[in-house]
Amino acid sequence: IHPIRIAPSILAADFSKLGQEVRDVVDAGADWVHLDVMDGHFVPNITFGPDIIKSLRPYTDATFDCHLMIAPADPFLEAFAKAGCDVLTVHAEAGPHLHRSLQTVRALGKRAGVSLNPATPESTIEYVLDAVDLILVMTVNPGFGGQKFIAEMEEKIRRIRAMVGDRPIEIEVDGGVTPETAGAVARAGSNVLVAGSAVFKGDSVAAYRGAIAAIRAA
Ligand code: DX5
Ligand code: ZN
Image (spheres, helix red, strand yellow):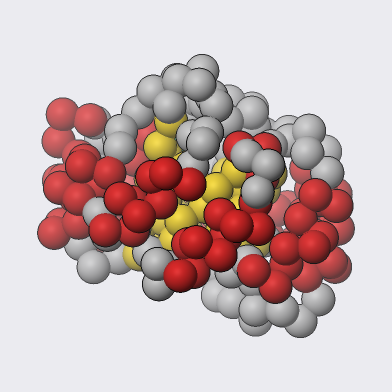
């Protein structure tokens, strides 16, 4: 029901020129821009927050797909919405009131996503499906780029695909997505493919374009 979308993660980009990197990767064929927000608490790494995202917003009209690896998330949802994020994804493990978090995102006029760590079963989100626009399946443990794809997650994607039924929910995969793994996750039922190192390992717009095209072709 949804088109395949490639969402490069700027986690692997050159942080000294993020605006240009965002512009380049969209010019190179990215559908969405994936923004990894980390707090050093929910995950063992720290990246950037709403002010940096706000400063990137003028560089493109592409969808800003914001992956919040922060706990708690609720106190910051409004700031990320105002910064220009279009999709706001919270982790199911980040707090006891997932349904409230998702409702808050929609009340802010944004698309509500929920993410599952590799160890979290899909049953965790069974009762929030009607509050969700996107499900992000982590295929590595969140916190760092460049990790190895966890192949057991293909089965989880298939189960989520079946659980979603005909609801208009996008299924996103994040972690270790390369031209080698992209085909399997798409066949399992995901349509939004995040890729960090596989895209930004190149050093030119042409290299980004080639990497995005290779993932799409897979
Ligand atoms: C990991 C992040 C990912 C990461 C993916 O915590 O959520 O978005 O950037 O990086 P790669 O594609 O290199 O595995
Ligand atoms: Zn991510």
